[in-house]
Length: 222
Image (cartoon, rainbow, N blue to C red; front, side, top):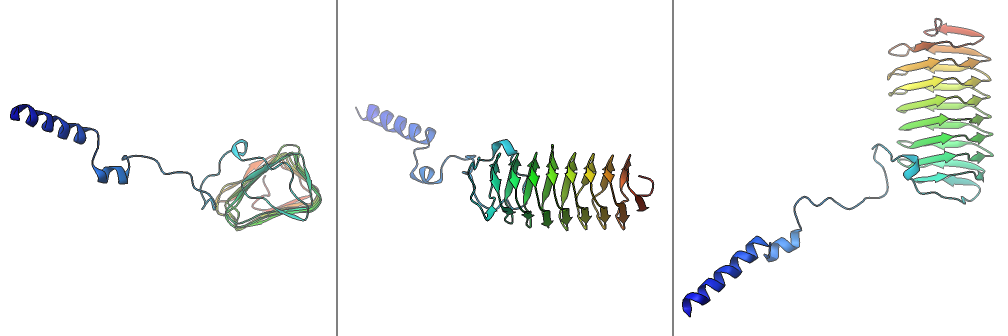
C-alpha cells in the first residue's frame, strides 16, 4: 500500500511540472506571448496602409483633426494632422488648407483643395491621383515626400528635408523651388509656368523631361 501511494504522489508531481502548474508560472504567463496592441503616437514608425485605417465618414466642419483615419468623399473646411498621427484622404474636398505637423503622415489621393498643403517636420507626404491644389505645396524640414500627377496652381516648395523626395508628372502654375535637401531629389516630367529653381541640395537633384520658363543652378540640365 505504501509503495502504491508513493508512486501516485510521484506521478502527480511530474504532471504539475510538465503542465506548468506552478503558481508563479500562472502569474508571468507563457513565454513568447506578443504584447497587446498600443494606441496613440506612432513615434516615427511606418504607418499602416491607408486601407487599414478606420474610415471616418462624417468629419465636422471648421479645422478637422485627422487622427489615424481615412476620409472618403466628404467636404470639410480645413484639415490638420496632429503630431505623430496618420491621415488618408480619398476623394476628399477641402474648402481651405491642410496642415501636417511634426512626425505625421499624410496620404492624399484624388483630392480637391482650394488652399495649401503646409508641412513642417512631417514624416511622409504623398499627393497622387487626379488631385488639384488651388494654392501651394510647402514641405519643409521633414523626411520624405512623393508628388505625382497633381495639378498645383501655386508653387511646389521643398526645403531642408532629410529623406527622399520625388516630384513627377505635375502641372504647376507658378514655381518649383527645391533647396537645401539632404536625402536625394528626383524631378521627372514636371511642367511649371514659372521657374525650376534648385540650390544647395546634397546630392544634386536628378531626373529629366521638366519644362519651365527658366531652369536655374542645379536643375539647369533637368
